[in-house]
Image 1 (cartoon, rainbow, N blue to C red):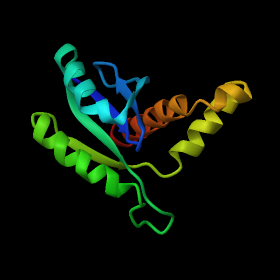
Image 2: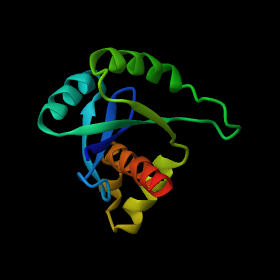
Image 3: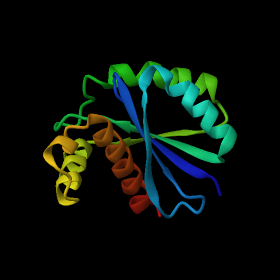
Image 4: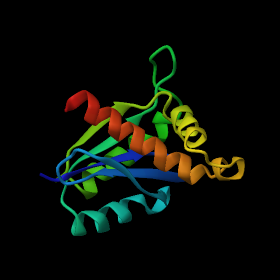
Amino acid sequence: MGRILAIDFGKVRTGIAVTDQLQIIASGLTTVKTDELIKFLKDYIVKENVELFLVGKPKQMNNTDSESEALILPFLTKLAKEIPQIPVKRIDERFTSKMAFQTMIDGGLKKNQRKNKALVDEISATIILQSYLYNNG
């Protein structure tokens, strides 16, 4: 089995989470600058067996696409062109940033640590991945 890699795409930086090889545990991996994301993914799949990319699908409360979906679509086109051998699934990412922030509070992180937006993005990607594993396991 290969890993599942989740992407919480952002305009400036993108959170990345990944499963273990048995697809049981979701862990935050890193946050990368969005303009370096494709290169990061290409480098990562050389070292690790990845069988699926999960990309968050931002939705409004009324279930319509959020404004940031317009930024994600060109990335998805480029991803399919650059790494066509790995399929992509989309997953609703509503509330993941709020859940990530709450996770930081529950985990006892200090206020200045909770301001670390890169950490919020990484935790958000992990929540997306955990949600997928829970609903598809």
